Length: 134
Image (cartoon, rainbow, N blue to C red):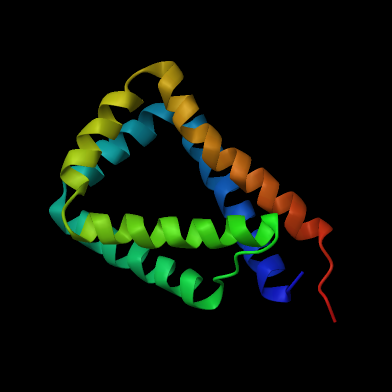
């Protein structure tokens, strides 16, 4: 496994685990924060630029389509890039209202967080288990 894939697996994995657990522990604060975020054009612009930059960096640095771990890292990069682009193109208004309506349901809130947590656990495990190829 390449050292870049291992590093990004660890980084993305730990980031997702820590963020998801924080959001899950503070459910009402998360819903309130996202409500304010989606209703603030200025904050959405900053978020879209930041997300777009992070996605571009991941895609340019890691666009590997072989091996499960590498593909998951690559997909996270592409999805981040697409999300940033959609937010920049103002699709956040439509998506935001949909997400906010889901988050007000207690079970759906935790179901919404589950894929990110599972990806985080997988990438963290594989990232710390993998050894770089010399």
